[in-house]
Length: 198
Image 1 (spheres, rainbow, N blue to C red):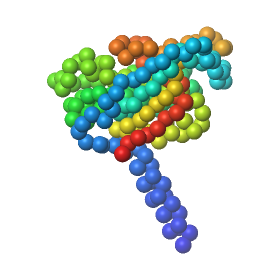
Image 2: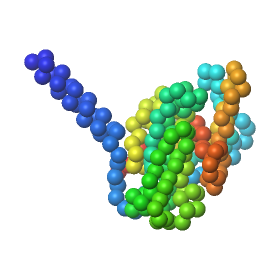
Image 3: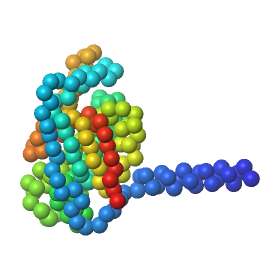
Image 4: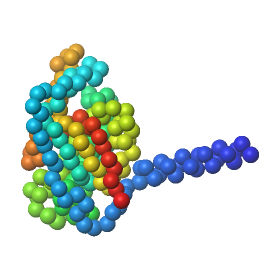
């Protein structure tokens, strides 16, 4: 009897893992039509997390589709930001567009390739981005862990700059959606996160 009970537990755990790791498909159509929003912070807001000083630079909100999700364990930023999301909005939240784009993440970068452009190249560049997430609390950290590729998420917080108090190592957020390449990723102090996938 005990063996059957444990077998049921293992199957249930497996189903939960499958549910939370399997990509989400919502079908064609723009799922996040707005653009990311930034707002001025009148006076610096500073947080200390372990050896790091985190300075909020500008308020930030986004609703977007998760194009890819990557976990990091051993790089310099992983103790602050263990998960990156590649996010898309506008036509980059439309699965009929995304199915023609090969998307990957590694080394804290988001990369894409196409055989032919479903939308203009510049639209891909300005309507998608790789974002490093720093959870502001344990609840947000748990929510980030539940995100699946294909989900629609709403993130609210601030773009931040980070400096190590021990050796001066720094990590600086992009503050525009029009840049590409090294330094173009957003570094977000995530105060709230909602998974709004239907």
